[in-house]
Length: 465
Image (tube, rainbow, N blue to C red; front, side):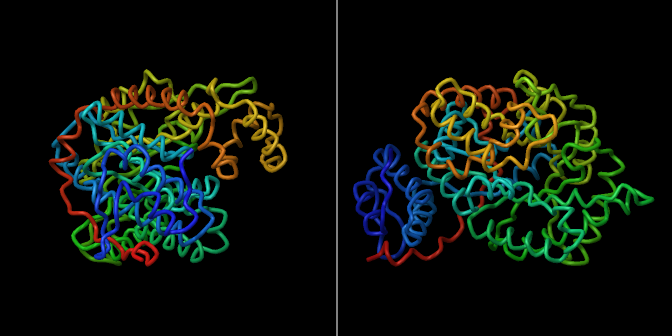
C-alpha cells in the first residue's frame, strides 16, 4: 500500500527523493524513475485518502504541477474533433472511459496499454451522478488521472471529461432555475479542476407531447446553450473547452435525423442570443437502443442489446455536415466485446464505456470474497429501497453495487487481487483500443492538439515552507 501523508510537510518529505517544489512555485523532477515507481502513487493516495484538508489540497496541486513538469497536459480534444469534422481522419472512435474505482491504477494501466500501441486518442471521464456515489469531486478525479499518467511515463495530452452534466427532469419540473444553477456550478468546478471537456445532458427535458420536433427539442437546446455560453466565459484564454450535447435520453426511444437537425438549429439560435460568435458543440450523443449499465437478468448476466448502427451512422453523417465530429454512443460497455469494431466502421466519433470495467472488478475471480460479502451486506442494508418488484438477489446486487464504490473506496483500492484484476482490465483495454482504432493515433493527436498547458494555480503555502 502506498503511503498516505498526514500533512503537507510529511508529503514533501515522502517525495523528497522524487521531486522538489521550487521557490517560484513550480515542480522540479529529481528522479523520474522513482517518481513513476512510488512518488505518483504517494500523491494519488494522499489526495484520495488523507483526512487533512490542507494535505489533500497540497497533493492535488502537486499532481497538476508534477504533470506539467513531466510533459503531461490536461487538454481539450476539440482540435482533434474539428479535424474529424473536416474529414482529416476516419477509422477512429475515441473511447471515453468512466473509471469509477481504482482510478489511479486503472488510468495508469489504460495509458500504458495505449502507449504500447502508439495510441493517444482516449478520454477519461466521470459523470456528475458518479461523482456522488464514487466519492470523487472533479478535483479528486483529475488528480487520480494525472497521477496515473505520471506513473505510466506518459507524455503529451491527457483528455479529462465531465460526462452527463444532466438536467434531472423531476427536479427541473419544480425548480428549473435551481437545476440550471446546479449545472452552472458543476461546470465551474470542472473547469477549476482542469477538465477541458464537458458534456451537457438536457435530453431528459425533451417533451415528445409537444406538436413539433422543434418545440420538443427547444428546452434541451436552450439549456445546453446556456451552459456552453458559461463555459466559454470560464475557459482559459487561447483554449477551447470541448463541449458535447445530447438529444436522446439513453434507454428511451431511438433518436432520429429530424430530432438532431431540430436540436442543432435551436441550439445555434440560443447560443447566438447569449454569446454571439461563440464556438458551439463538437459532438452530440444520440440514443441507438442501449441502456446505461445494461439490463440484468434474474439468474445473472445482462440482456442482449439491440443496437441500431444505421441510426448511429446516419446521425453521425448529419452531425459532420453541420461541423461536428459526429455522433456519440452511450451505454455500450456491456455489448459483446467482438462488436466494437463496428463503431469506427459507421463513423461514431466517441463511445462511452463504464459498467464493463466495474463488472470486471466486481466479478473477477481474484476479487476478495470477504470484501464481496461486506459489500453485499452493505447494499442490502443501505440500498434496499432501490429494489424493483420481482428482482432476484442477483439483479438487485448488479443494479445497486455501483453505490458501494464510494463507501468502500479505499478497500477497493487496497483489494488483495488488484494485480490480477488490473491485468484483466489491461487485456480489455487492449481489445477495445484495437477495435476502436486507438492504436497508432498518437501522431494524429500530436498533429492537432497543440495548445500550451494552462497556467498553474499558486502553490499551497505548506509546500513552500
